[in-house]
Amino acid sequence: MAVKSKRRSWKDKLNDSKDFPKVAQIDADKSKRWGEGTFVIPAPLEVDAAMRTIRRGKLTTIDALRKSLARKHGATIACPITTGIFAWIAAHAADEAEAEGARRITPYWRTLKTGGEVNLKYPGGIANLRARLAAEGHKVVKRGARYFVADYERAVVEPSLE
Image (tube, rainbow, N blue to C red; front, side, top):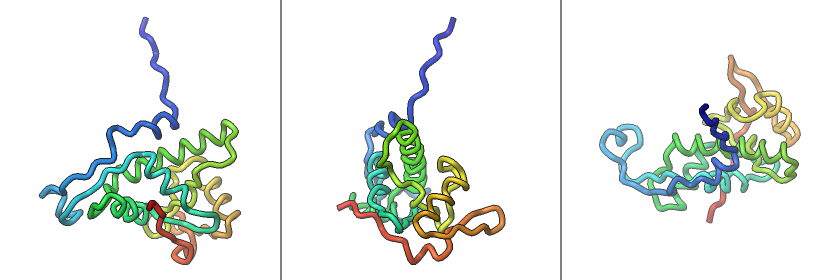
């Protein structure tokens, strides 16, 4: 009989640094998309820490997170793929912590995609995200099948990691 492995919690995933952060040279095949220089693959906890710096009523974007992380590590850019994945993990870890009774969690709903788009892969879907954003004075509008925070530019700040 096969032993079923226990599923790792989101908190466990968030705390698994996977030997990150790492700074590396941008290789030739990526330079067409990323430009030249260096890139950082941040640790999941660094992304979580950046998301935690966004205060009530303010917003940030994945691109702003990446810019802040790159600056922290002296890199040209931060990897867009891992930064997005680690933000997603941070969101689910926060939701998991809230379900366990935590009162102060990472405010994942304040981290938007490019152009002010709400990330529907975050916990609770659009109903949860819309309610949390509205409670902080933001209006969510639907454009086609996607959702955006109206006038998000006014509230966007770059995370402070120094």
